[in-house]
Image 1 (cartoon, one colour):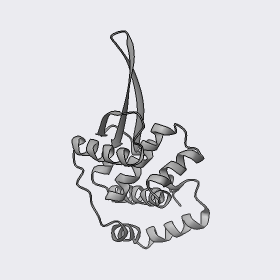
Image 2: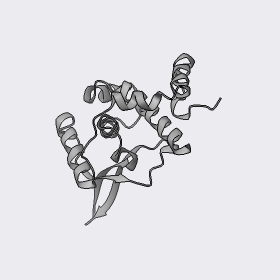
Image 3: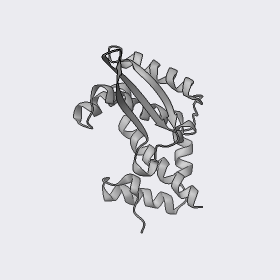
Length: 166
C-alpha cells in the first residue's frame, strides 16, 4: 500500500476513507463536484490585484507587497505551494525591505477556493512567521473554511499525482 504523502499526519481512519475513494475511482469526481468554480486569475498582474484585494480586506495596516507572481520553480513535491519572503536591499545608504509572495503555477488551473486558501496562507505569514496557533487563527479569520480547504487541497494534489501516473 503506497503512502499518501500529502496526507501524512492525518488519522488512519481518515486515510482509509481516502484510500477507498481512490480504489473506487471516486476521489477526482468528488473533488470536481465539490469545487466546480474556476478562477480568472491567469497572469501575474491579475494575481497581484487578487492578493492586494484580500490583503486590503484583512491586513490593511500590514507592510506593502513589492511583488506577487506565479512561480513555476516552486516544487509541489517539496511542499512549497507558495512562499512569502522579505528581501532587504541597500538603497542610498538606507536599508529597504520588500515583501514578495510567490504562488506555485499549479494554482493557475486549480479551483478558485484552493487559490484563495494558498493566498490566505501566504498573507498570514506577513503577520505570523511560524505555523503556530496565532497563524492558523489568522488564516481562519481570513478564510473560515481554511482547514477543510487545506485538507481538500491535499486530496487534489494526491489526485493530480495519480492522474500524472496514468
